[in-house]
Amino acid sequence: MRTKICGITSYEDAIDAIEAGADALGFVFYEKSPRYISVVDAKKIISKLPPFVEKVALFVNVDANTINSVCQESGATLAQLHFDVPDDLYKDLKVPHIKVVRAKNKEDILKFSDEYRLVDAYCEAYGGAGKRINIEWFDGVDCSKIILAGGLDPKNVNTLKSYGFYGVDVSSGVEKSHGVKDSAKVKEFIDNAK
Image 1 (tube, rainbow, N blue to C red):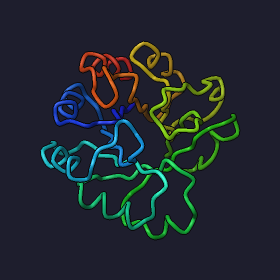
Image 2: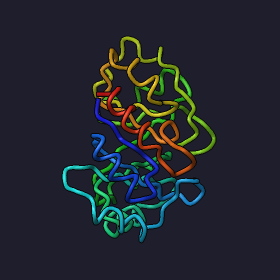
Image 3: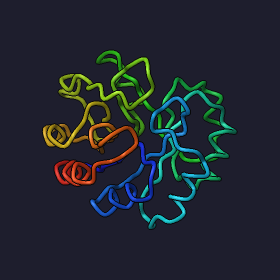
Image 4: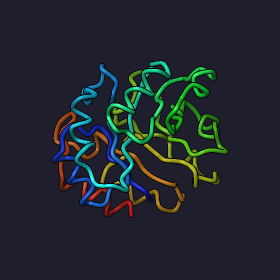
């Protein structure tokens, strides 16, 4: 499974994750998040990163212009849309993007099933709550285009291999504190996912 370490707030955490084998890093541009990072600080980190690592910008309740400009200014390569996006916003995006399904029930995980998407457990807050989705919902479902998030950690990620998820996304499950990663947990998570 491909791995994304989300909520990156320092260059050290970014490099530790990349050296441990992360395929993608997530940068949270949502001011209410304890993992929020400014465009300026994200650019300082992203500009020093090696190639072939996806730099994902996470957005909540913003317009297409904001998404386009933040990605361009920061150097992010993919926008992660963690909100109910109005249809007309997609046509105004000038950057690659991935939709997020905040699943309340089993039917929700089938949304956007013809495209790659991130599936997270629904909670009032947007992301990073560490709430685990009901894994039994994925029994018999084609998970090859799903990136699973929510409540994952180094101990439980290897139990997902039989489902064939495209990837996994972790934030709080590999942290010492909000926005500060534990490099040993990051390495263990990635080793167990792969």
